[in-house]
Length: 240
Image 1 (cartoon, rainbow, N blue to C red):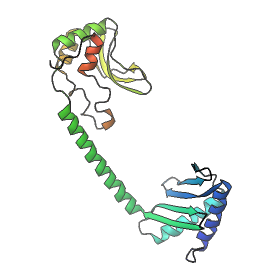
Image 2 (image 1 turned 120 degrees about the horizontal axis):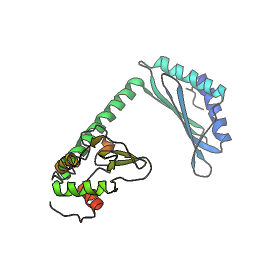
Image 3 (image 1 turned 135 degrees about the vertical axis):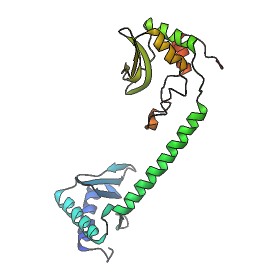
Image 4 (image 1 turned 90 degrees about the vertical axis):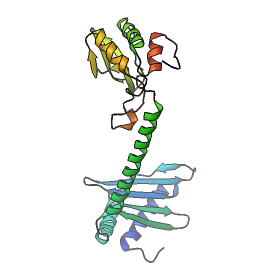
């Protein structure tokens, strides 16, 4: 046993030994993170079968020890604790305590947010360059309007978000997101001429939803020339 462990750590090491042993694990990792509302616990154990399993429950005495340890670290850490983790290896009777500060966590989150923003920017630029800006044109738009009026619809019908679609409902041409196969009108046209004029000016690029902030929507099951031609039963031409 490490002679530098505090009395609280020693009692916690004993509690963790009991916790992992009762779960038939030879070791694992416990992590906890304080939030404004609660203290989040997560324990994963290395089971004798070779699998990683969730280890629980945390008894009230164990929770009290963890909270006492967290208060100890918080008192010694300017700015507060980000998270505290304990790596357990019962085969070697080894307990390793690690923690980050709230400031370090904030910096790490800010760095990841900046990196993700740059990845999103680069992805959007690739789409801007890769998607066709060629308008669908009045001929294809008129064929789509006729197909919709005849009862066909442009929409996928799988669980959750199904992209963007087109439909003809109660005398109105509708464009909007589709959920579980049901279209939610975002834009409607009361006359065919207005719909055809709008659709004729659109393109794979203009309807790729790149104007939205959520990158999961970009070019995700959007309205494209290929889908429109499939709707009207026309072959996809390489050039319009």
